[in-house]
Image 1 (cartoon, helix red, strand yellow):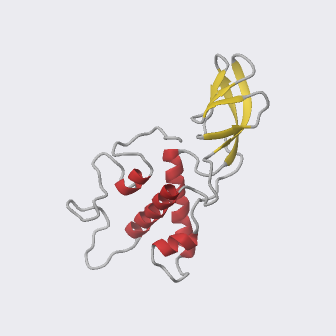
Image 2: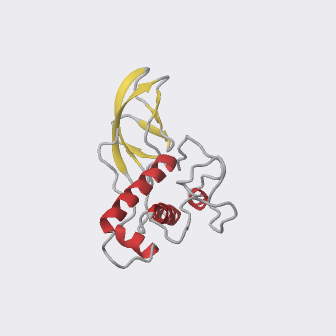
Image 3: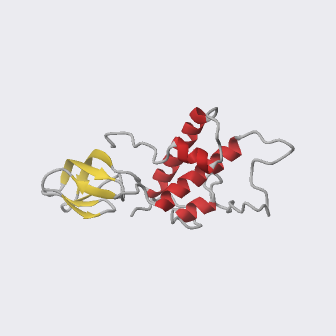
Length: 180
């Protein structure tokens, strides 16, 4: 389990710039959309920013699989990280053990990778735009042949294809988080 709730990797100012919004009247509402979009992305690709985690794992043949991925480091002494996908070598044999580690992606001086930031901003834009009351009969759901082109049969409409593409998820829906 995560020992801290990860902060959203987007801030209101950059989202407002992306949405071409200049007033502050919607800032508190936008914060909820930012939080939701960041959570949706984390659920699909794993942790974005470094976050501490501690969990009790089952060790089998001296190995355990950690729940929060990708894994940056293991803080528990004598444990070894074998793969960023969360495979760890335990110092003992089979059984249950508690392990502390850091999950997330290595960030550069610029912070979160650009494609993930852009995916987040685009997802907030999509969620925000489709939540607003439309006038003059505009639809809030995708329309066949519409220029947006974000709807793919078999995928959830809340995650448009352009966002999935930026995250490297492809066209096929999956319940398995991708890491890396």
